[in-house]
Length: 126
Image 1 (cartoon, rainbow, N blue to C red):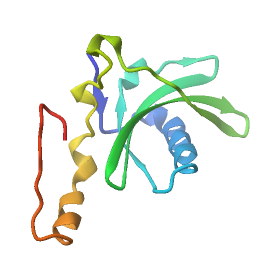
Image 2 (cartoon, rainbow, N blue to C red):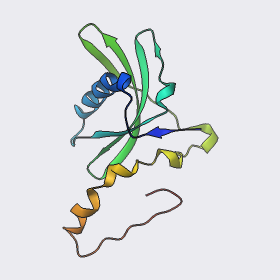
Image 3 (tube, rainbow, N blue to C red):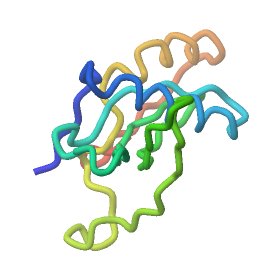
């Protein structure tokens, strides 16, 4: 079963920070890591580690997979092209929705801009 943790394990923190910095370098808005998918399944093999992170920035959240390789001068980061799980028929599992903390300030900001806000929840997706 897929697990998403909001807190990053200490032993993965340097690799997660490197992946986030690399990802933000090519984006027009700053993302933050709001969760990690199956952190126990991120074993280090020959200096490289595969990380599945939940990234939120602006009005969107995404789950991205990275290969982070330790180098003498830091980390080499690459985005992994990952096909959706076949067991889900090509759909992203609901467990990969952003953790609750990702949108804590969003509603307050939006209510300040509009007279009302409509929130739609559909089968665990938002």
